[in-house]
Length: 155
Image (cartoon, rainbow, N blue to C red; front, side, top):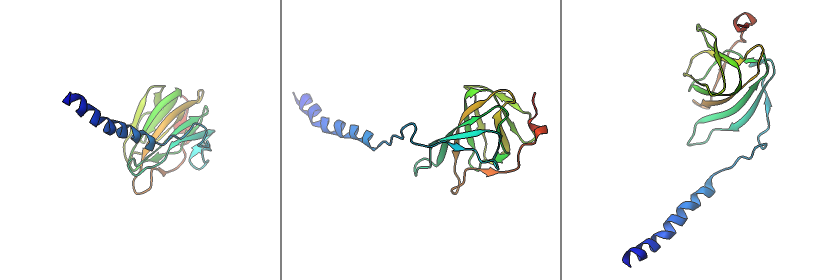
């Protein structure tokens, strides 16, 4: 009997713990307008669907980026690094001084802090990825020059 009374007394604690879910924020699909990739940062047709912005407890941003065939980012680096999760299509990634590498759905790429790189679709296929990018002092990317046609090339 004492165990039943003790369990009953604990119920309000369990119920109040469930109320924490009401502090969650739902950002409905379609409530975050797509953005066209700026021509100073991208070549070709690129669209960014914002997923989330910086929060006090999570200093990172997220976006789902769509590259049309032939589209790619300019060279850039991230002060806190970036994770890319390839969701659709076929793309390329390349670090400065390294080989251009093919990426496909399910591939996950870690771009370390400060490493100059670019990423985008192949010449013949589109590509989409989720980008999760850390922030340092309010900044998540340092944009640089465009990737030349010679560097981009088709394999």
